[in-house]
Structures are given as C-alpha cells and as structure tokens.
Length: 388
Ligand SMILES: Cc1ncc(COP(=O)(O)O)c(C=O)c1O
Image 1 (cartoon, rainbow, N blue to C red):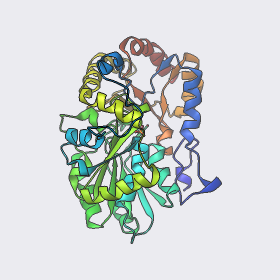
Image 2: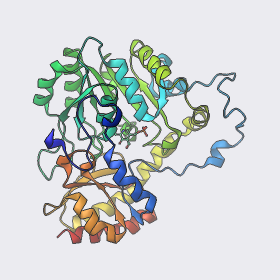
Image 3: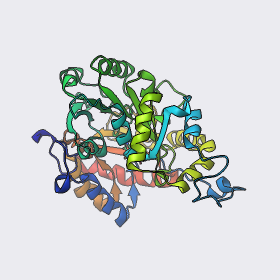
Image 4: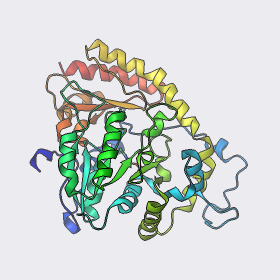
C-alpha cells in the first residue's frame, strides 16, 4: 500500500483492532490548528449557518429535553422520511454520517461474501477506516483527477472497479465529493449502481453534501438507484448542525430492519436532546440552503477574481461551499501551508487529507460570513503570489 502512504491521508489496509487501529491522521494535524485560532479560515467543510435559536425556540417548551417518551412520540424518522419522500420504515437515524456509515455497511454486507470493502479514494478518512474497525479489509478504487489541472468533476476508474467487484462484499462511495464539491456524473452513478447490482455488491453512499444541490438535477441520492443501495446523510454539513450529531440511513424497508438492529446494537438509543432540537429545526431546514446559495452569489466572485488575477483558470462546482484547486509550480500543499499560508494567518485544507495523490491540491471554502471572507481574500492573494 506504499502509494497510499502520506502523513495526512487515510490509513488503508486490513482489519485492525487494539493498538493496530490507526489514527485519523488529518484530525491530529487540523484540530490543534483550529484550537490555536486561525485569523483567515478558508477550511470550513460545512456551512456554519447562523441559526436564530431564540426564533427557533419561541413558544417551545424544553421541558422534555431529556424525556424520550412523550405523546406524540419523538419520531425523527417520520420527519426525515417526509423530507426525502420515502416511508418512515425506510429511515434509521444515528449519530452523524460517521456512525450511520457503520449501520449502512452492516445493512448491505452480504454474510456469505468476503469481508472486504471497496472504498472510493480520494475521500474523508472515516469512510475508509471505519470498515477496518469492523473487521473488513479496505480496497481502494479511484475517482480522481485525470491530470494536474483537473479540479472536477472527476470520473470513476471503471476498469479498476470492474476488476475488484468479484472479491468485495460492499462498496462505499461519496457521490458529492469532498474535496472537489462536484456531484458524480450521472452516467458514472448509473454505471456504478448497475455494476454493483450485477455483482451482488451492496452500495453505501455518503451523501453528507448532496443537499446543497436540492431542487437541482445534481440532487440524485443513491437510494433511488436500487434495493442494494443505501444512502447516508446528516444535519452536519449543509445545515450547520454538526454538534447535534443527527444522521440517518435510507434504504429498502428490509435493509433498514438490519440497519435498525445495528443502531440498537451499537447505540441503544439516540441522544434525546438532539432529537428534540432537530424536531424544532427540521421545519426550517430550507433556511441554511437559501443562505448557502446567497453566499455563493456574494463570495464566490471574489475568489474567482483572485484566481483569475493569477491566471488560474478554475470552474467551481455547481453547488456547495468549497472546491479544490491545483497549486502551481509543483508545490506540495503541506509545504505551501507551512511556509507561506501560516505566516499570513491563513488556513486552507491540504489535499493530502483525502489521498496522497492530491498532495498538490488545496481545498478552499467560500461559505464564510461575507466580511470575513472578503478579508481573507487579501492573504489568499498573497499566498498565491508566494507560490510563484
Ligand atoms: C464526506 C464526509 N462525510 C461525512 C462527514 C462527517 O459527517 P457527520 O458529522 O455527519 O458525521 C464528513 C466530515 O468532514 C465528510 O467530509
């Protein structure tokens, strides 16, 4: 697995327990930086929606915040199913995508197949490391740039995937990709669903970013592509509610019986305060999506202007709050950040967090508060100058 070695990249490999369970390396690099404070932060992976909590709570009693049994009962599955247009029996909730991915994998992994999981790379580390903790071997497949200037949409390596499907029991993909922000091309998506169905391989789809494209042709959750497909989503990235840790799995009613058992096995019950707050917020979840679209109008032109002034031609993804760019002059993002961005008080995400092959890329977020974002464009401009 040498080609997958990088100080910040996901740790791929076989089943891992005890002291062999590898760290999530990027957290060890990133979290201390955030804790130390960043003057110009262009790293947000999610939209920090400024929720008006007084408005949300108006007239609502918090008396039952820790009481799970009320009349009418707490029923987050019913709320999610109404938003997604499925039956409540097709939804199982959990704590964030991070936990729901495990429920989803357990729901699709065929007990008679090898405990091997194909995982799309580049991707965020949990997607490739949690299967190892569940006793599975991880086998990477590629959906990356075709050349240095390619910032998305990236295409699936169909040949590579076709070769490994016979030996795996499940496959994990992130159709709306982190770090590019691009949705998987529709023909790739259909091809992937079809080829997995043909090989009897269950498909887990991390859709934490997909709601940024709600109402557009790019909003194509995988659960609509067949009984073997299970989608996973949460309130974290598009709704600014990561700390609630509310996520969900959507699939066929039969698969969701297994996902529900996985939830009971690994979690017992969900955090009632989070569910209560989510009940109050879910009727208003269009608000963050609207503000996200507004930020795109306000902030993205400023970013494009800076890139253009450095002759960096770049097409942003059609939705969301971030995209990635390839750094000029063969810079490694880690070196560029440590040598040039740090002294400017600027932080961007090094592409190596998602795969070693992205070492020359950085991810830039434009979803921030407009005045702070405009102020960050000056050091970002200086950063690009420093790369020359
Ligand atoms: C692709 C992707 N999925 C899921 C998550 C985490 O989601 P959650 O907070 O719902 O566990 C992240 C966080 O960075 C992510 O990048």
